Image (tube, rainbow, N blue to C red; front, side):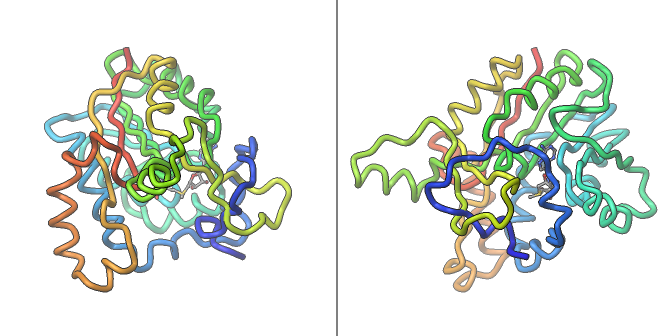
Length: 263
Ligand SMILES: C[S@@+](CC[C@H](N)C(=O)[O-])C[C@H]1O[C@@H](n2cnc3c(N)ncnc32)[C@H](O)[C@@H]1O
């Protein structure tokens, strides 16, 4: 089947469907990471930066897929749960996390199987592009976090530099609502949503759920096939390190990492 990350349909309204079973329909997400060493390392750098100097008791990676980030999180937390709705992802995680103490539990972000205040760290990376209306998920994240707990939420950013420039040229303001990024029609009526968000709108939705912005990084700032062909990964990562903080103010990159604190 088509890689859902590469199969958006312009102009299609964001679907309200939140069930993550696109990842159970023959799509091998582990392969998505072939030739994406730069993006993977850029996200590791961002998470390390945002968590530096802190240690947590109990963490969960929501929509954590096959556990790509769980071992990094384990270096910051005594306990880590991979919280993932798709059985195929959890199956792949068995191999990736074999021999570790990372727990693997099937659950969806709007119905987290944790008690109120049970966690002091929650991460949710590369899931927001499946959530056109994430308020229920944010409320759940706030519920399971202890007061003072930390959430790191990655936002697929519509207002990145290229779109910002295009909108300016066309004299159109950036939309405040999520924008569907499907480029080919979904092959199934209940296909998972693919959207990019307005980061300021998302920050407002998080605040309404009691999650207050503490820090922000602009990530994968050099995500471009042309740059990848021209520069070695090490050089791209040197630029990435130097720019994640300073480009965050204007939401430059395609991926914005938010660090939030539960009130
Ligand atoms: C692009 S993958 C990202 C996986 C992982 N976070 C990573 O960065 O490698 C998207 C993941 O989100 C999960 N997902 C989709 N909708 C979800 C929802 N409503 N609640 C929780 N997870 C969801 C999918 O099953 C899939 O594993």
